[in-house]
Each structure stands twice: as C-alpha cells, then as structure tokens.
Length: 434
Image (tube, rainbow, N blue to C red):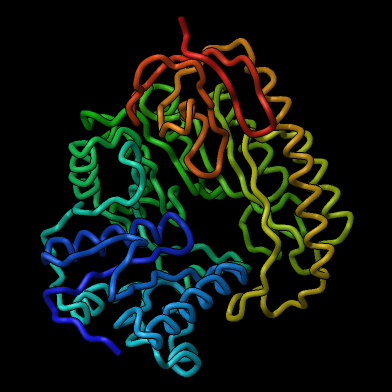
C-alpha cells in the first residue's frame, strides 16, 4: 500500500442523508479548513470521512454500501484511511466495528472533537458560524436546533441525535451574517422540529422571535421554514410570515397520516380534526401559503380503509407540495413492538397511488400559473436556459422554473420577474418579463 507524508494528505468528506447531515459536514469542513487542512467535499482525497445516514432501510443500505466501497478502495491502495461518522455510526457502532473492521475509526453524531483529533486537527470553539458551505452559493441551511423530544413511534432520530437542543438566537444571527457576507441570499431553517425551538433555552417557543431577528440581517432576501411539527404549532409564526416579506410563504410540515387510529399508534399527539383545523388556520392566516407535507404509508395496522381515507384527504386538501415514504420497521423504536403486517408490495402500491394523486394536483395548480408573472431566484444555468425557484419552492424537492430566451447573464442569487407560458406537473417554463 502506498504511503503519503502528512503534508500531502487531502481529506475527502462524503455526505449521505438529509440537510442536517449536509450542515454537519459543512461544520466539519470549516473546522478542518481552520486547521489548515487540505479538504474537499465529495472529491478526491487519500483520507475519506463518510458522514452516514441511519434513518430508514434505503438510507442505511446506501451508507453501508458507501463504507464498503471505500474500504475496498483502501484495500486496493487507492485511499489510505477511512473514517465513518454520522447517524448510522451513532446508532450501530458496535455492529459496524464487528462487521466492517477495516474502517480506521467510527464516530457518533456528538463526537466532532474526537473526529478532528483523529484527523490531526483541533476543535476550535470560537468558530461560531464558520462553515465551508457545499450548497450553491445563493442558499444555505441554518440548523437552529439539534435532536428531538417528540415520542413518534416510527422514528429513530432521538436514538441518533439525542434530546432537543436549541442554538441561542445571538449565535444564529452571527452565523446568518457570515453567510450573507459570503453571498447567501436564502436561509433554509432546519431542525428535527422547528416549532420546539427555544423551549429548552428560554422556557417558551421562540421561533417567531428568531425570525424577527433574522429578517434584520442585511443581504438575506428569503427565509424558508422546514420541518415544523403539527402539535403545539406556535401560531405567531404565521403572523411574522404574513407581515415580513423576507419570510417565504412556505412551510414544510410533515403530517405523516390522517387516520385517527394510525395517528394514535404513531404517537403524533394530534387527530384528523385538529390537523384539518390547523391547516385551515394556516390558509386563513397566510392565504398565499404553499404547504409541503410528507406522509407514511404501510404503517403497522394501516388498513385499506385507513389508506383510502388518507388518499381521499389529500385529494381534498390539495397540498402544493407532497412527498410519500414507505414505512420502515426500525429496531428500538416503539413501532418495532408492532407486527410489520403490510406487505412490501402493498406499501409500494400505496405510495405510488399517493404520488399519482399528488402529480395530478400539482399539474392542475401549475396550470393556474400560466400567464402569471412570478418573482424567481436564479439557481444556475443549464445549456441555453436558466433554472430558478419561486418563494414557494425549496431546493431539490420542489418545482423548478425554466427560463428561456435570456439575452444577458443572470447570476445565481439574483431575482428576476418571469412570465409563465407553460407548465408540467412539477416544472414551470417562462420568459423574463418585458
């Protein structure tokens, strides 16, 4: 096996999973950079750090396959060292050490200082908000809290991320200011549960206060909310959204199901009636709001009647954005005590049916936008056209706006007025307003 001197080491950080993992990798990259380490994100390096996901079966399989791939590269002499961190490592470290011993070292989600030490770096406590962002330069994630106190039966996140821990408002403002100084125009607020923000630090929910502080940051044009929990939602957030133009009229609120029996078993702390009332209040408070939700089908005990209720409900609710997951039977969760009695093929069929319904809804809603002029943030250029998003669309998961016949250069992060002349189920097409 080839060897390299310490001076020639390059550390390659690979990120799997959700936006919270992306954020964590960016913090790791920033710490390494501050230690004068040569680092890349998903590039080439002789030292590899894999930030894993352990959420559901597909994500765990991808993480394990990635680890095995780089262990093989290590055995072939293509890389020198392989380190593993993140949720999978937090949750299954003893099993991973036993099954894949050729990894140099495994680290959990709270062991950043130890990982840095293994990489020959020191953890710098003074680096508030210092990250090496990996997203396009016009937007960045802002993680406002870590962990989760919710008791959802199907979810293993508390096992991997621990209890809810809010980041102080003043630290988040410093981080937002640094991001803005680097050209970031859009902040995407993330946490396992945004709506719980502040309860641990301030003894009350303070998401609205945080938003009022963030809109004061010069350079930030859009602030987007991801991952709100439906039970105990702080309604004053909607007032801020309505009154502050920087807050996108958009919210991601995973509802998971609508059947009362399923919701009770899921331990969601809400009912069908309360959920419908909450969404009604959203639309009254912010009539122009785009609501994104995610659903789980195939949960233990979900009957055909439960599924049809769910399907009919989303037909009636006409969510602007929607995703659907098949239930994953996760050990050490409360739901693992139940019998995983919905066959895989049935789960798959139900997920497909939900997305077929949503595709039609999305197509109909997009057709209504033809002829409208929308404010669009430019993300990138592809070939002869530009790609952007409206305030109703989050990166990677929502609609795109394709802009043709552009005569001059449009920089990422710039805003333009686009007249829509064509629409499909998940894309809009238009030209710059004359």
